[in-house]
Amino acid sequence: MTLYGLILVGGYAFGAGGYVAPTLGLDQVPLSPLARMGHALQSEQLAGKHDDWELLERDIEKLRQQWDGPRAGVLEMVVGVRGLSNRHQPDWQQAAAACERLQWPRCDSAALEEMQRRSRP
Image (cartoon, rainbow, N blue to C red; front, side, top):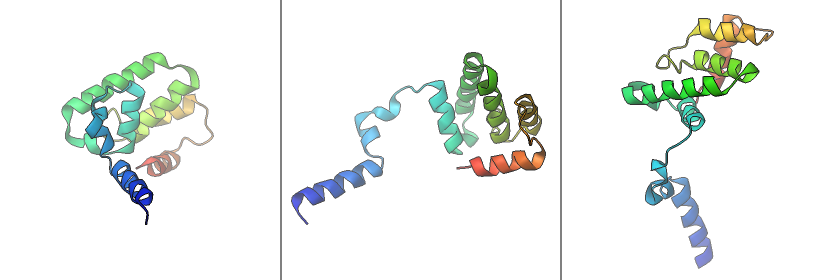
């Protein structure tokens, strides 16, 4: 393997391993409310951190204020199905109510549970 090949493979391994962001201090960059909510949707890491849950609740409230119409309804349904306002404990009533407001064809518990199952990381 040539020197360029080694550099390419080493660079990929370094980047894929997640060493670049902490090295450059990019993991400390303040994220938007939407980005933090996306992070919460991708992981279960907030399970025991009280401050993280409070920040997420404030972020969700900011998004509720910014969004309207169907976008807000989908937000409410995702928050309910994934339990983002209840420490990952689904709020099926909130999700079903949002689903019905969106006039989706299936808002029964089986459909919402399937949505939850498919959305898990």
